[in-house]
Image 1 (spheres, each protein chain N blue to C red):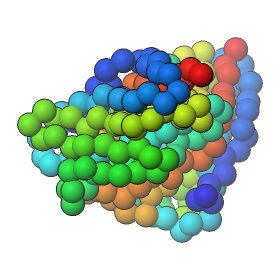
Image 2: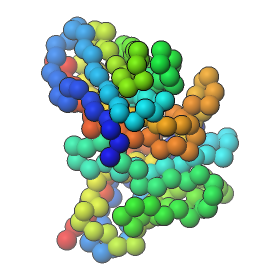
Image 3: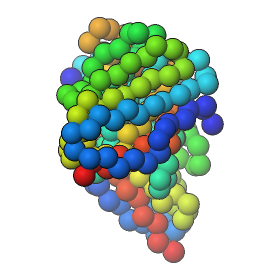
Amino acid sequence: DAGITQSPRHKVTETGTPVTLRCHQTENHRYMYWYRQDPGHGLRLIHYSYGVKDTDKGEVSDGYSVSRSKTEDFLLTLESATSSQTSVYFCAISEGQGNYEQYFGPGTRLTVT
Amino acid sequence: AQSVTQLGSHVSVSEGALVLLRCNYSSSVPPYLFWYVQYPNQGLQLLLKYTSAATLVKGINGFEAEFKKSETSFHLTKPSAHMRDAAEYFCAVSEIGRTGGYNKLIFGAGTRLAVHP
């Protein structure tokens, strides 16, 4: 299995609070991604990174920010959590682009009350 | 923009029966296509991928998929279902990002496969 960990694995938080999710990889892959998974929507890309300090928005980036100060860590921050951000969040990594496989972490289940 | 449609959010088969999960894509360029599987409370795992080398792609656990350009399809099949195949299956297409050259995956909504004894 690819060396990807996510923390925390479960979190319950209140509306309006900031939340940071962490993705850590031991594979030294260049590309890292944050997705959210919701029933009926599959996985939707929030933000991705193509190198240290290089990030770009995905299709559902509103209300989220990311940072990547080291190759191995990619942080996702919910600036002010809302109930619509209740979801399962997956981190993924990839060695390259195009036909390269993405490897997924175990996920973080976030509930915003 | 590219998109993926999976026909049927739920599919139910008997153990030993043929599994057929449908995926259609839209893309203006030759695509890279993937099938991933997700078991309960786990992340996604790659089953197989199409990279233009061959139209019939074999994957893990006895699954295969055939790329049909004329039908813009990439359906997933397995000749004989097993109880352990019960999971959710996602088709995905690789898209170039806004700034060019990045491996972004566009996922279908998923198909949940149930296997009955």
